[in-house]
Image (cartoon, rainbow, N blue to C red):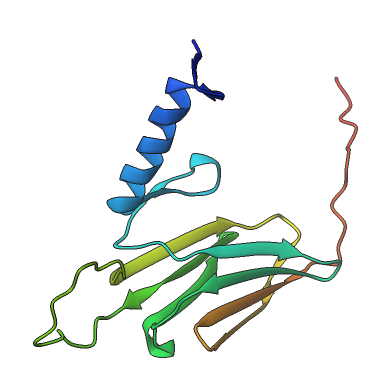
Length: 150
């Protein structure tokens, strides 16, 4: 059912889905790639995932996170980026009108394609950005294999 409000088309189901997404984000519940699992985290960093002909690239925004507080693993074709953004100290004598910065633990997981070569992984952290590069395997997987029926 769709209702018209002014010139916009209002879809109550879209509103419910948006609300669900916002509530999950507030409580740190995030869906991983195609609903594979749920993670509990204090905040969720934004990530870009891309590829070129030689490599896969995962870039994560991690402002105010120290290099020693970031851990990257690749196991069973799942890339995991986890860590913690720590609040330095409580500001004394300040009256905050709004506090939007998130602190605490975070985790992001990405299922990598079969062509990802787990032996060719590099991670670099600079200026609050984490860049993970995963090489592609040169071995081509058979596209189709005919199985004889006995």
